[in-house]
Length: 105
Image (cartoon, rainbow, N blue to C red):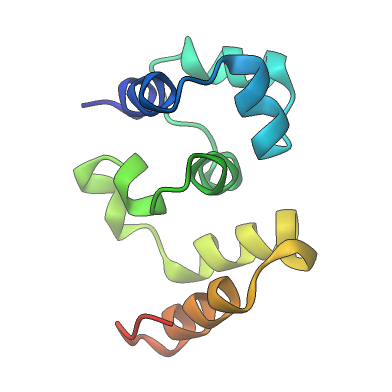
């Protein structure tokens, strides 16, 4: 299943539309629409925000081959976009990624 198929399915399950997803994720509605109509997965910061809005793990939204993206890129993108809004649990997960551990916070 592609990124957009997963997001559309999650939106359907949660009974939310693009406008609501935009509000929950802090991404403009036009950007959400553009990403849902594209064949490519958006930048990691968009994936992070959408995953948080849909209350799913980031890995769920990635394609099988994409799990190899560096932890550094994932962490730096998340911090750059929403660092001030991270929960203690999210911060601990980022620390675990930096340290290379699989410890769930």
